[in-house]
Every structure is written in C-alpha cells, then in structure tokens.
Image (cartoon, rainbow, N blue to C red; front, side, top):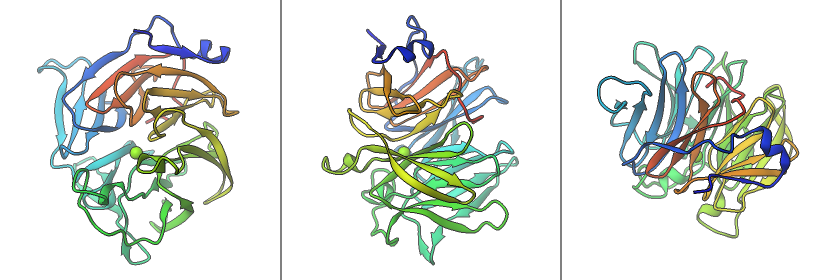
Length: 304
Ligand code: MG
C-alpha cells in the first residue's frame, strides 16, 4: 500500500519514502488524545467511548505493551503535558480540564466559565509560560456516546486560556463553530486552531485558522487551510513550522505558508496525532479503532 502522497517537493525532506505504517494497537472504539512520555518510554491515549485511558509501551515485558492507565476516564479526550511533565486532560463526562499530579491525585483546573458548566473540553496545549489553552466545543454533550447528553449552557464554543499564576479562565476566541485541535508554531508566535464543524453539517467549516499570539491575547485570525478529506481534529507542528493535521484519509502536512505538501494515508479515519519516540521523530496516529506509528524525517516542535 502507498503510505505517502507528495504534492510539493518540500515534502521530500520530511518523510522517509520506505517507512512503514505500523499498527500498534487495535480494538479501540474511538482512539484520541495521544501524548508521549519520553521519561517513561510510553504513549498515553484515550479510547473515549470505552471510558478508558490506555498506555502503550514499545518494549514492555509483561504482555503486548498495552495496559489501562485510567478507567473510568470520564470520557477523556485530548491530553498534553505541562512544563513540569504533568498530564493535562480534557474530560467530556465531567466537562472539565484536569491535571494528574505525580502522586496520582487529580486537580481540577477548569470546569465552568461565567458561572456555568463548560460544554465539553476537547483538546489542550500548554505554552512555555505555563498557560493552558483549550477548546470547548459541544461534541461531548451531543449524545451519550462520548459523554453525557446535555443542553450546552455556554453562549459560545470558546477557546480558553487558563492563566498559570491566577488560575483565571479567559475566552480568547468565541467565533468558532466547533473549535477542536490546537498547536503553537515552534516560536509560539502563532496558534493554529481547527474548526471541525463540518463533522455534523457539510456546509460548515473544515478549516484550520491561525492567530497571532500577543501575551494572553489572540489577534489577526485568518484561515490557514481547508481540509479536503473529512475534518481537521487534532493537529501538531514540527520543528520547521510545518503543520500536521488529522483528516479522514490520514494525516495532512501543510507548510507554514498553508500549502498542502503531502499526506500519510491511513486505512482508518484519523482523529489526532503526536510526535514521540526517543528522538521525537515518531508520529503516533490515533485512527478510530487503532493507534499507528510512522517514523518521519522531521521532529515534533513541542516536547509533549
Ligand atoms: Mg479533538
């Protein structure tokens, strides 16, 4: 099977044409939220409808390398790590963002805004100053499949910034249909945010927008790219500033100028991805029932 499609010669420097797509895990219902723990040599990811967070280890001695990290997971979706290495998680079921402390205790970072419950936090990223940025679309309250059906109480589907010093929550964008994955450019001067609203209405956006980051604010929002297969969900940047997006047919790679450089074709719909491995050149891909890995010729920008 052809794994790579190249549309621009710049893609040549980013991939190894002979590299194989490895299926590491299968049997999930909806794999999401992969995050790499270099210090523990493992990948942690969500299986949202199955109410579990799983852990895969490449060289496990105790049977297959797959174990349950946490269950029930409160329908956890996206994860990242903060600058102290702690796991930060979005939970649909409890409609909150949490941090897992080194002793396993759970700290609630955000569960309401303007005195009302959040919709269903979806994905999260941490900036080098410790601020936590996350999206709050309604996917987790639309049905009982990946959360608990409920009427949204927020007036918008916000993108939020959690202040690392005060813990205060501020909306930094309120004009998304369904904000989803987010990723900073390597210099953190730009923030990319996916709008995946076409998931439920083909007339709505399937775009990734980019904003200028000025302190705690976003400005100059504009469309960066449109996804030509399915929707953009989780996204990541590499050290050269290329953006790697999930899509229905696999993973799409965009140059910083928005040009589609190439694709990694995956036999299942992709919801999220992350860089990891000993040299951060392994791309872990959460694709519906399975988690895949492919080794690239580029390196993830953010440590998690
Ligand atoms: Mg998502």
